[in-house]
Length: 230
Image (cartoon, rainbow, N blue to C red):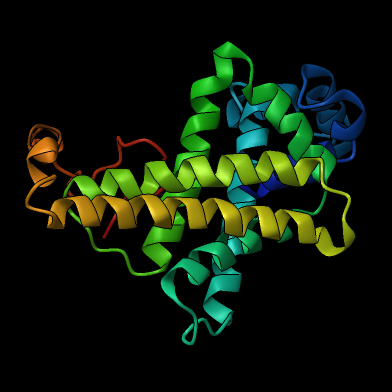
């Protein structure tokens, strides 16, 4: 059986997860994973040029894949759209095998040098959620939906890391409040747009955002892009 680079990366990731709770997503953990897997150092560096950072991103991508699999198997047909969004965020957190690995990842991606990687990973998660739920927007809404969900997801993730309630119930209630807040804002914006007295105040902002176009499907140079769109 042919062993691919991706197979080897996943082996390294599995091995590194044993060390992350103690040494974080660090060079120390990366070197320990190489030793555990008995892989040539040059090969490991070829697969993961940035070492631990590449494996931290692989860990995040693994969680995204698990979330998508659960979304495929769950029946969300009877839920309101806001409830589907909440369910997707909940699924994403529930598939995490170890909170400490995520906590260490937050520490890593809070460093200025890796902040863009962390932001791209979160954006990618939210992009996958919207796509999985059937979003077909191709205007400024493409950006606003993902930007808004990125804020909801990030704040919920941080709350979840410190949540010790039974079944993480406090986190799910926090998530519902955040989504309710977003929905209230959207409702207010719609009311302003429908009010002939207030609508002129949004004329300039609406014109400005109207100049922004969503990326063409198939682009791979976008925030959070993981695979080309088809």
